[in-house]
View 1 (cartoon, rainbow, N blue to C red):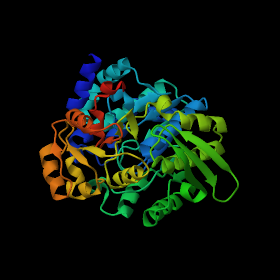
View 2: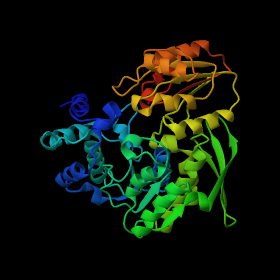
View 3: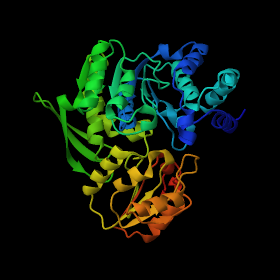
View 4: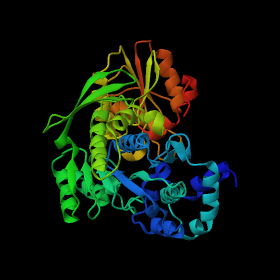
Length: 436
């Protein structure tokens, strides 16, 4: 079996949420437990940190992994979905899992796959745990895929749980109130395992605190303990100041993740890292600063206010839900540009009637679609956008939409691609001298 054949088998044989949506979501942990039991429970052979939430959990996970690597720990990082290469999901010290391992793992697991019919996510979680165990990582940062309580990653016994925030997303699976969504996210809070909550959000946060109290988990709310403000910003860099709300501690940090929304994420990661240090992890102030300054290069993070060109400014961002688009609009108020060209596509289960009015007002809209079954067809998106007062043209794919935007854009304009992780994944970076 070649690497391409192994991926073809996994993509074609296993239900994949990113492609078909809710039909691929398995509402129990039975398959994951059985897969891992077959492998000898590899998740028990390394320490782990579990990171959930609605928005920001990916950035927080990469920040934690970058600092732990900089502190000298052999660090695993499991995230989802991938943008360009399946192996982006499974990294050790920033390096993707070997193709040979993916092949061997797939061949080894095929009989069990044919027997129990796991989802794509279930098999990739087991694959990640096996790779981390084989690589003898000292700690692994594990990002929740969807929800928490029934997410396949939720078979680990972490040393720390982190919940970035609670927002509106996947309501068809997690509930139609923020409190019910919080209840699902709270499922990663374990007996006696400390938890960091990114920010106070009233009712949803009370749900998290109640779960923590029920299972005897100590809880720190990052936003209550630490404040953060931006000191300087450029398209490629953000300098922030993190300050102790109850003391004199003050830290300046340079972030290579320049999005304004990274203020909240770095505060959550900072609090989690200080908790880990309190538990005995050897994380120096220098490792904190250097790790957070090199998140992209250390972990391979892409798609979070990612600048591909500066004249005109071309930015990719995976914002794809209500809170993500709100953060993006706030980011735009901080920038100076002549005209905004917005390349936008979305998946059909996000409800265009809800999402489209949230788009920033701009000079030109370019509506398109990713090449996955879940994508909302560009022609339907254009019709819905016109009804929402966002008239624009339809393009068959993101690269033709982006080409049209670049043709129209002046050097002092901004071209922004957003709306779907899968749309961003199809951007041809080589046209901008950038490789995944």
